[in-house]
Amino acid sequence: MTDPFYVSRCTVRKVRGVHRRARLATGHEFDMGVHGPIKEHYGIDAEDLPLPVDFLVATAGG
Image 1 (tube, one colour):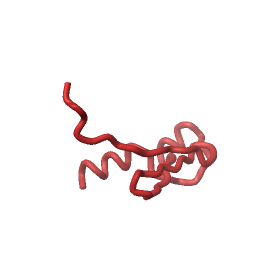
Image 2 (image 1 turned 90 degrees about the horizontal axis):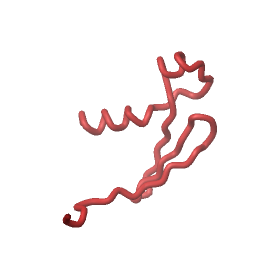
Image 3 (image 1 turned 135 degrees about the vertical axis):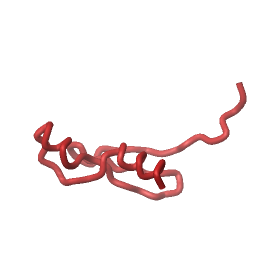
Image 4 (image 1 turned 90 degrees about the vertical axis):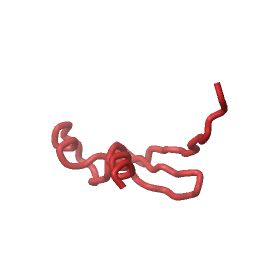
């Protein structure tokens, strides 16, 4: 097996409840959480924040 071409380096920490903050190796930070139907389905009372999958979809589509 060959060495990997790229290795992602990031950290994710819990802010409170379902709120998470990610920090990339570049120093950029972004917040993740829940919103819309997910909050309604689980009865979560929290600030509306993008789901982690929202970032993946935006990246793939962008």
